[in-house]
Every structure is written in structure tokens, then in C-alpha cells.
Length: 177
Image 1 (cartoon, rainbow, N blue to C red):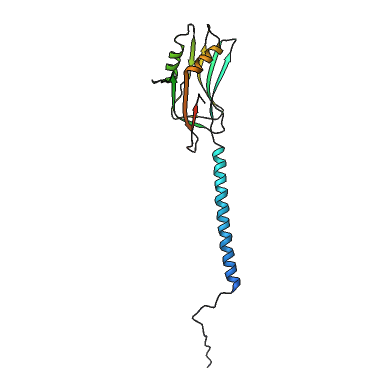
Image 2 (image 1 turned 30 degrees about the vertical axis):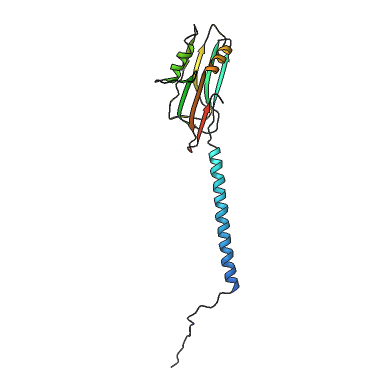
């Protein structure tokens, strides 16, 4: 009867340089891949935030034929604006009430005879899509020109609107800027 005897060493053989080199290269490649992925994710996040950035602006439209002055707040950014809060100051005094826009117009136009106005209220925590606007006031005046009315209003009124993007980045519109 024949016997086959295997002799196995209890110590592993020393690693050769090829095995050590490939292990180090694999680790370096993995670290470089993680760094590039992190950098690409950071750039993609910045790009995504820029693609939804709102920008609120005040606009004034004058129609001399109809003697009207239109005051707008428009989102001319490329993302929606979430209006969190706003304040209207007349002669440096904040206006309070259920409808600050209407209260402001009553105060501003009380000395102007034959003035008629319409307005749209600003709503807190409302959503203003890109390209849309809030028509704050439409004022019809007979005694003074719309240009004179614009000059008078701009000296007395300050509107501040705090709004944010859908990513929660805060922005402020200040009519004095």
C-alpha cells in the first residue's frame, strides 16, 4: 500500500513585488475615483442650484394715454420663489394689517383726488413660478402724470421681500437697492 503525504508550511510565502504593486495601484485608483466622484457631485449640485435660482425684481409700467401706473413684482429668475416674508414701509414706518398692500395704497393715495387703484396682495409662504408676476398696484391718476406719481411713490415707499429657492437658499429683494 502506498501513502501520499503532503507537507504544508504553516507560514505563508512572502508576497512577491507584483502582488504588492498591484494592491497599491488598486488602492490609489480607488481613491482617485472617489475624489473625482465627489468633485463631480459637488459640481452637479452647484449646477442644480443655479438652475432653480429665483430672482425677484420690481417693475414699473407707465401708460400715459390711459394715465395709469402699474407696479409689479416679477420672478425673472429660472426657478420658483417661495415668498417667506415681506414688509412695506411708508415714510420709514412699517405698514401692518390684513392686507398691507391695500393699506399702503390707501395711505399713499389719500392726498390724490380722482385717483383709483386696484391691487393684488402678497401672500406669505406662497410660490411664485419663474416668469410670473404679482401686480401690486394699478393706479389711475387724473391730476398728476404717472411719472410724477412714480417719483413721489419711490421716495416714500420701501418694499422688502424675503424669499428662497426650492433648495432653501435665502434671498432678499429690497426696493432701495
